[in-house]
Image (cartoon, rainbow, N blue to C red):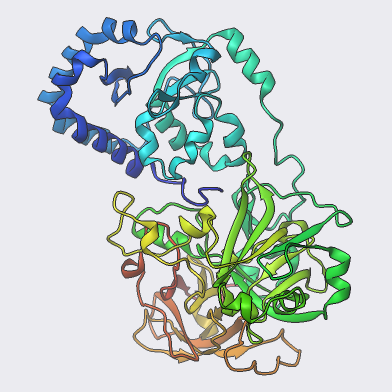
Length: 597
């Protein structure tokens, strides 16, 4: 489930985003600089430890006219050099991976230097719109980000911090607190707060919203601490057909809410009987308990492989942002029918929206929606789940109630469910409208139009190798290499075959599939179109004669004969979602280790 409010949207490489910012501003304004010099809309030029940088500024700055006028002769001199050496400067700039800042890499310290104005909080708060300029503060520094708003990866939500501090927002979206983000911010520094204002602002900052997070298993490999996002080691992922809850991958967009089960209420809107408020005990007692085994997969699973082709924005998930569990609860269909869903509602409604109890500092909750026909179908098996693997939902997985939409991307399986709305419209949530969508490899952040693509629902066929691991060795004396992994397909399509190669795809072998743990009876075949759970697979493949290295490859086929693409590049997209190319692992073949023991 971006992946932060700009869930996975804000994590970007220094090279790509910084190059984009510099080039966009440079090309847009270079030819009109001379006409703008008289209007105070001029670039502020500075040098940090020998690194030249250009920051374009907006008008509307209180107390800034004198600052810029004092610097105008220096600017003209610098501009002449810029025009003479544009190519060299840009080439040098793009060559740098990091800029030596006056701040440390961890934070931008409060410094008052002779060339930076000192502002009060009152002056900063006057700049809260594009018309007056958008100023923010961070750790005592003052930044004019007006020109950055239009290219901010998270959209205009950055305006929520206009005229105030970034800290409350970055406490929620801690992915921002990385070196490359701080470097970009530093390009927009125009001054510092006076000591009185900084002290006042520090005392007003809210406490850490992540201070009450649940305890997590130490085996989890963390991709983001705040909000918490982690996956189990690939080596243990396929050890269990039913993934233990403690190592089931964790995908949170916001702080985990604390919910009192006695006070919990689930609201349902859009039905003929009006708004319904349902308690947890009512949900459990009024509706039959239904159990399914279903695999959930994050849209960004295997994103790390797309990053190897070209950097994308999002958490750098490996192959383990996928897990399998049993889920128990009331069927959504039963609940909607009980409270008045019928032909009259069905004639108007097209979607069912879900809203979580996890919220950002503005009170905006995580939200998503699914098509109505999936929600009310007898074969859809959509649950209002309150149990996972036979126990109450863990806090990280939506306690006390979450939606489980089998066969559909994890992002629609809303946790900590607070509201259901039967509607003629999709959810207006950021995560439904401006994230979790796939685009052409040729689409970039300059040209992307999120309205042009549908929200991801069913996921494509997927498989990956969990054993052996990349870079390990196998012993030639074993004569065979044991290969293990998982396979799954969205939309209830059953995995019917997994092909495995140890020579990069020249020759293939068919793996053995299983639907239970070793020594247990296999699960009965699912009804057509309702294969919600993954299949684990295993095969022993002969080690080719004289091979020094094995390139192990797997690819799966589902009941619709959908197959995985062979390479990543043709399916690359700027958000790094839907990564399902053949999975490849390279291992060395070692000589006679066992004989030497």
